[in-house]
Amino acid sequence: MRRYQGTLWDGLALRRQRAAADPDSDPRPVALPPDWEGEAAAALAALAPTSRPASLPAAAEAWIRRAAAAGRKSGLLDEAGAAELAEGLRALLLSRRGSVGAEAWAGGRETRFLLNLPAFLEPAGGFDLEGYAAACALGVRTLDALSGSRVPRLRLGFADLAGLLAGLGLPYDSGEARATAAGIAALTRGAAEAESGRIAARLGAREPVALLWPVPPAATPVPGLAAAARAALDAAAASPGLRHQALVALAMPDAVEALLGAETGGIAPAPGSTRPVLTEAGEWAEVPTRAAMLATRLHPDRAGALLAPVSETARDAMRQAVAPFLHAVPPAPVALPAPARPAPKSQAPLRRHAGTTLHVSVGGHRVALRTAEDEQGRLLEVAFSLSKEGAAFRSLMDAFAHSVSLGLQQGVPLAEYVEAFAYTRFGPCGVVEGDPAIPRATSVLDWAFRRLALDYLGRHDLPQPSEEDCLGDTVGSAAQQAPLLPLDLPELPAASPRGRRRTLRLVS
Image (cartoon, rainbow, N blue to C red; front, side, top):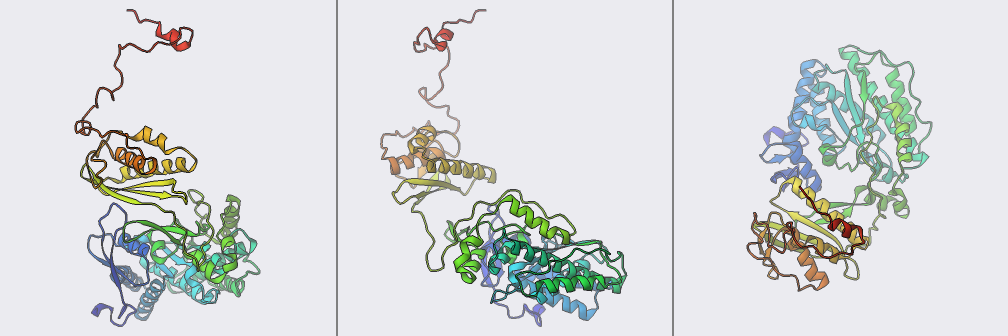
């Protein structure tokens, strides 16, 4: 397009697909580079919150040009500097190395800039130190421009330290990993404060240079990292003053991390070797994480150890290693990730459980029941998909299915669940379309567990409910209602506590 001529967007091939920011939103067309995955498409839909089609160049240009214009207006940038800033931001975004935060994509004056650490890995396994330092400086310049050079505190941060460590072949819970993380944090702070000093030389200093500096690691497994961090801190110390009070801070992940392909926020460890993705057929499948693919490709003999679960002690040690170089305490995760599974081998397919997916309509509501079985054909897991229900109801059904799956895996007989949940009553209910063996159901659970009883227990003795039973306001048949007193109760031994209680009479 004409407005992109002469920029990195000019001639860029784009792949168009439909994506939604969340399951409750309607999918809409989005356009992004062909090799970007489905999670990036959903992230772009979230970052460009309109009902119209979204494309990466159009959505990005909105904040890139706004930053360049604001930088010119504040005196931070001249015409050449504004053009250089804009083209540098396009290059960072297309390489998935960095981006502003979600607020800037939505039109706000965001003071967050994110750098995706694994994107700076070199093909041979090294780290692009020069490119990373330049990206830190560009991020500070962008945030200062977007704020009109008025905000004293900016937030330059990085994400997916776990992916970087996996690519470098360093276990998260190791001294080498902590030294590398500290070196990255020191380089980030030094490069950021050096750029703040250059801005102060142009627009005036607001803050003095610190007299006492954190000591960066003397050596790291990454060649040149310790020297680069020391040089960046020395360059910042040589500044006549700083423009900002604070610059480096980590944040909880949002859609920007997903757009850049970062799998973890900040310094969090790897969540595992596989991740669930929703296929175009609407089914969930497990695929290797990017960290697992990096570890398998670069360090196949140690991939499992690199993605092993870590303790809270290891997480605290990592936070303590990077904290001296941050201007804010690293955010603590809400919960520990699930234990990592062994990294998949590149030459072997992923292990999958057998199972089925059944699609029916219950009372006019589409329902999908998915099952998973072990090698002997025993039921291991159940899951529901309900297309017309709200998020709260779907969440409850997901939690219910998860609890049933845990019980099945711990040995609870399926027959117990059938007895407990067959003929339960709640909407949707009524006619079942798509299952000739079960023409009516009093609820989704009624249909599901009677279907499971047929498939896995061979139960053909469960009667079909009547049309009256499936009405939304029915109270059930007399046999299904709770007893109404007074009724004759069964005889119990007089000596038992319950028997003695039955002999009591209420008098008025």
